[in-house]
Structure formats: C-alpha cells, structure tokens
Length: 114
Length: 115
Image (tube, rainbow over all chains, first blue to last red; front, side, top):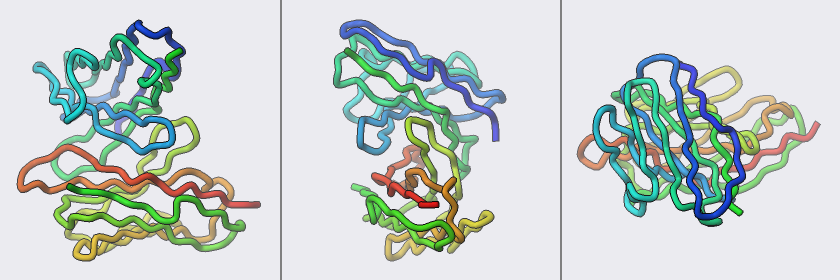
C-alpha cells in the first residue's frame, strides 16, 4: 500500500476562521476521499476528491463549507471554513486504487474549535 | 438505506483469550466489507477486506467471515494480546446498482485486552 500522510495532525482554532488540511500519498492513486468522525461517532464520508474537477459531495455537506482541491493524483486538501465548535472532529483522508480494492486511511487531523 | 451495527459496543477480555466481534448490515447488496482498527485519536489501519463473493479472509491471528445473505460478518481474534486493544470498525461498500465509492461504517467495538 502507498504511504498516506496528513497534516496537521491536530489543531486548535478560533471560531469563524478556516483550516486547510493536506493529504499526500506517495504514489498515484485513482480515488481520494475525505471523511469526518465526530466525537463518539463513526466515520461519515464528506466528499470524493476528483482530480482536475470539482469534488462530489455527500448529502449534508456543501462546497462552501468544505472546499476540496485535488490538483494531481497524489495530493488533496480539505478546508473547513467559517468554523464553529460543531466542526470539532477528526478529519481523515482516504484512498483506493479503483475497482474493488482496499481503502486506506491517513492518521487523521484532530480539530478543536473554541 | 444501508445501516451497519456492531455488537458489542465494548468488550474486555483477559490476555490469551479468543474472541469474536460482530458486524451486521441491513442491505445485502454490497461490493465488499472491510475491517479496520483505530487506536485512540488516530486514523484507521486496514485489517481485512472481504469481497462479496468470498466467505472469509485470514491474516495472522485474524479471521473475518462474511455471510452476505444474512447481512453478517464476524472478526475472530485468536490468542488476544494487550496490543490488540483498540476500536474495531467494520465498513461496507454498498452496491446501489452502480459504482459507489462510499464506505458506510459501523459505530465500532472498543476492545480492551487485560494483561
């Protein structure tokens, strides 16, 4: 499997500000995804990051709040905009190589909004 | 709508014991099912992937089974060790009659292996 790294690993942010999370994979992958894990809950898919086009968002998530970039096949960013305490979560990026292959996850970014 | 449930929510066992974690899903139309472990405050580590056409997969002390028709999977851990202590998550990739990238996760089983 490719090595997937995220940064920052954690951050404490003021409400109303924005944070950009970076995800880097050490080889080209077809599909990259962003998930959110709210405290005490399981993971929920935010969006699929599409290379060279707009991300595909799941129901309940919008581009204005969670803009995503994917400039190439190894890198993606997720921005959490205009943050509120309800955005405090772990954000994880993930990749798959396509088909019915295994999904791999980064180490996550623990975000606390105060 | 696909829902994934894991029972029990928490489990504590003495070291050396064999144990079974359960995962159930409401819709049998899936591409595959994957088991992960999550250490506190960390990301997910993939353990096993079972395709919808398979019945089981094994990796070391871990064995995962899949009964798609009944909507169940189990993760068997043999000879448990304190290092196995973590939250175990199962996730299904639904088959909505077309390609879907989404994984739907259960709420996890928190396992504590006592030395």
